[in-house]
Length: 307
Ligand SMILES: *[C@@H]1O[C@H](CO)[C@@H](O)[C@H](O)[C@H]1NC(C)=O
Image (cartoon, rainbow, N blue to C red; front, side):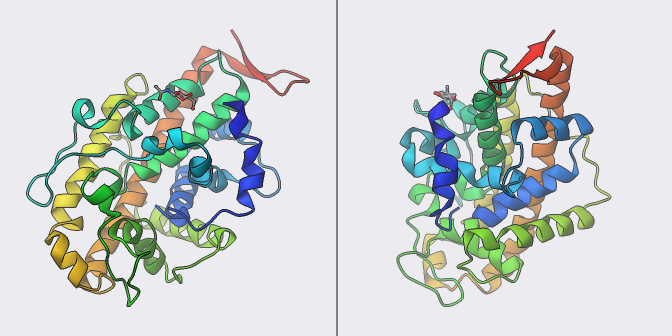
């Protein structure tokens, strides 16, 4: 798996606008950063040392950038809930995860790998980047839905843009987040960092009086938390995303009333993803320090635990 890392800088140079579009993922990461304990902030510094201006938000979009080159990672970004929205919504690990894995098993895997002292530092770094990304994706309703490939095959219009490239999945990944922030839809990769930082600051501010202690934080049972989040996210497909049915979605421009109703949902989901990611990383950092003090070995750039 060390193979993945050298590709990183190479891939950045031609990364297309991707999925939650990059804006959403970057925002989740910046928001989580605001809630990190000192220990967790240190863990992030150790595993994601910043170089040439890269920060936690670059780590958040890495999993999408490498995805085309590593097809076996594709199923880790979603879970195909085989339900019947809008009539009934449900997602089950045993029937929906599949043998190639899914977002819930990937969260479990990466959670276990971050503090696995049998892995070298590069592998733990990869695990952290995957985890930051998947905690975002599991809050996007259409990443927890099998119908029409998570809405990828539902062709829609948004603010007059119709056609092959506009589909319901993409609207939720990118168009709605961009419109919330008053951004044009075809931003370049490096134009998203500043608006993402601003969006995170706004979400931090508007939610400043909400309690955070109730979030699922049992890193010993990652599947339980992951499926709790997945079920909550999946519900939104019946409650809003697919509520009016596929025909209605295809026949109406979604940049109007549909957008207005979707914006608070997206704000809430990005907020939750940020808070939950921070809660998770705080728990991982606490576990790590209880395992022993992390020390850097000279020379090989490896990390090890001093017990
Ligand atoms: C866990 O992640 C590693 C590294 O990405 C991967 O090689 C392995 O197949 C994953 N295992 C499961 C069960 O998903």
